[in-house]
Image 1: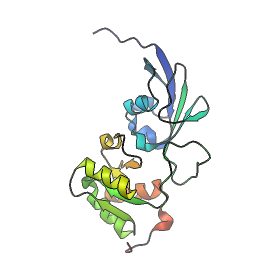
Image 2: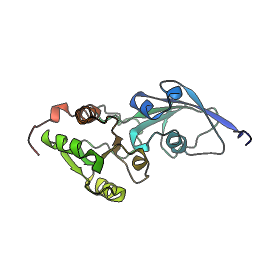
Image 3: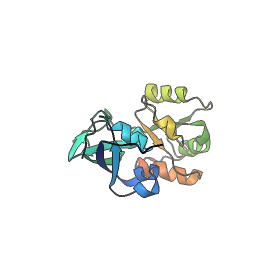
Image 4: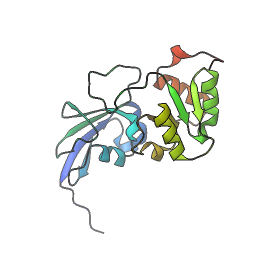
Length: 192
């Protein structure tokens, strides 16, 4: 099979926890992404394995852009994770508004995490059925943040707020959620 020829090259750099989704040789450094045509910026981001819901800010050549921005040859792209604990509203964000009242919907494989979040006083519902469409529907209708370990679920275009939980240990998962959304001050044990 002959090598594929690419007409264009852009430089990408992913920051902080977004590096968890990248192969080791692309983490925490600038790397070249070769492409043809005029893809929207979201296409290479997702092709590299980073769910759209994990991204809060994209800077191309020093300017903030949306997911529909057309990638061009020689672009320098910086991709930043969700900023729930820092207000970056003066900068163009990729979703309409942040969710400040944290309500969650958890995939069926995170039932123990849901229980622990409830014990800490958070609104954490979990889907007893492993049906992505139901999780997405509840997330949209009830303005809930999806928590899952399923990266493919988070790549669905209907989802606006979702987080990929990295740890498999329930206690570490709780710490991950509390830190990610800066929720330590909102803990009210045994209150729902």
